Length: 221
Image 1: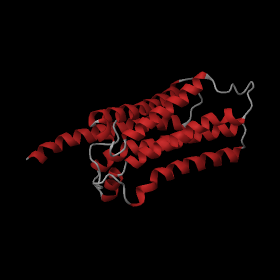
Image 2: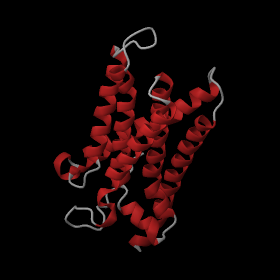
Image 3: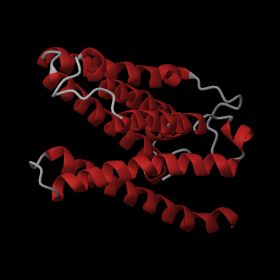
Image 4: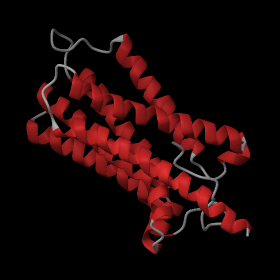
């Protein structure tokens, strides 16, 4: 489930040029703006904050899906626009990490603005561990996606960290969608959609790897 391959992209210096320079910042700000807008629309009460957090989670899922399919789709459908997306897909990785940070903030926000009571237990040990784990794993992913990460960590370590980090979120989204579908929950479109898209992403990556194996002998010939 590694989203960044060994190709270093068009910039020999490791710097990303062009309009993609601030793309991850734009994604993070967009996630924050949309989340706050949802909270304002529903009021900053318990329901509004919960809905805003749920929206942030779904927005983060959309960015994650784009990040893990950008490479396979660009290689399976070799058109210039998709090729550019493939070359700069680390911006989507960083954008995912930024938007996930917004989600973590939205999870912790009710405990900061609402008084502790029957409907708000405050910062429980499980919540603190969840937030700390989310910060740690998204930070590892963001660092491993850097162009110079291979020089600092070694290529095999970088690939392993990035692969494990991204696979963790794949399992989270896939199993979360499956649990909502099979468990005693009210049916919703997002649960089925998230599970279906995670399966689609896995199939695309499998097709990409299979196609690469078929192309390899032609390159050697």
